[in-house]
Image: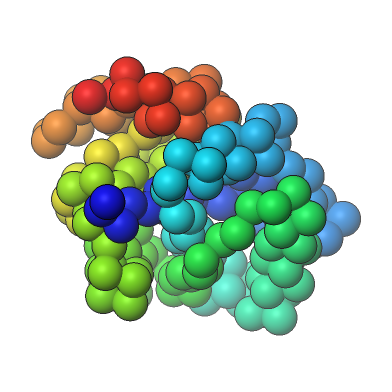
Amino acid sequence: MPNRFVFLDRDGTLVEDHGFVHRLSDYALLPGTIEALQLLRRSGFRLAIVTNQSGIGRGIFGTDDFWAFQRRLLEDLAAADVHIEETYVCPHRPEDGCDCRKPRPGLVWQARDRFSIDLRESWVIGDHASDVALGVAAGCRSVLVLTGHGAEERARVIAAPGPPALIVADVLDAARHIVGGQAD
């Protein structure tokens, strides 16, 4: 059995995105998140979060703020028997030119090397064109969810070169398509 992962964007995909998400008072899971991740796990997928957090690099919030918010998410998921293997975060600003900022595949390649992941059997789910492009760059299949910024990113994803991405309403719809094999 291949070592399959689903790489999940965080803000706008799993949790509400209010812009530079970091305050615990703004924490809110999007509907269907728990059910989606449980379905993926039951179907043999391992899960990792891959997130751009330029608010750190811009000085809007600190790494402690990020990790406090992230711990809350991971605790809620763990309470629902959803295990996230790892959180991969890019703290840099877009203009920094790092290799870890989506759509560059540096963070996915770190995960590949650590967990011996079969990227051809893996997926990226997110609400930005950069999430879809990350999937293409890393050799995974991609899903754009229309939550968060997805609706406004849809035209960019459709016009982008490369394999077509699956476009669905939310992370639960994405999980159902992935597990059901309807996305091939």
